[in-house]
Image 1 (cartoon, rainbow, N blue to C red):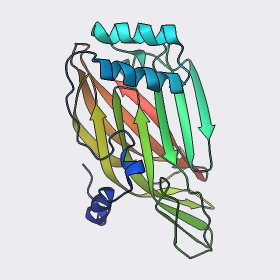
Image 2 (cartoon, helix red, strand yellow):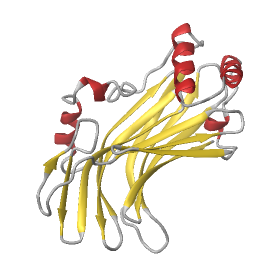
Image 3 (cartoon, rainbow, N blue to C red):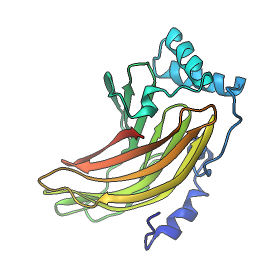
Image 4 (cartoon, helix red, strand yellow):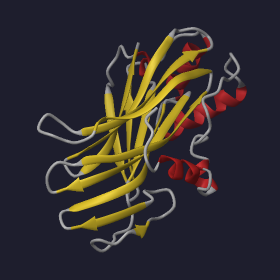
Length: 242
């Protein structure tokens, strides 16, 4: 895992955030094993997640059947591309819902600042959004914006700080990774800045990776949440593979 000069301070901040933020998928909790079956609690949790994100009832039942049979959802397999992508933008968040051929989904999001500050002045932002933002001549730095992803059984995320400029944008820091796994285990989790600065070939990005092993079979899968920065904005992307 990548360590930063200010990482210890920010990691300790994780444990002091308000409960409303901490409830986001058990943020800050280590990867953990669930029971090897689809419990009533997990079934209810998945149905609520899918219903909120507009997955039809028959599709939900089919996905639960696959999970109970130890089969891998398309969103986790890395073998299928999304058949549709929907983006929801609010004042405090950019959220993307990708739907795969079997109806499974990945929901990724990144927080956006909801207040403005005068150039050169650091100002606190609303709870649940980037911690601070500072602007100067030709740049805006956003600090500790949460990037998050969930498929219903695996949730993971981290905090990213980045700089928006009149030219190429860049990533300042990443910290406080977290993973939660249901119906299996997550291991070998890593967080790093993979490309520090935007250039002519593409955006800067950082990502958290984990290896998920379903309890009922299906093999292990490498799952990745990317936070990308470029063209004066930030967004998220879900990746899965063997």
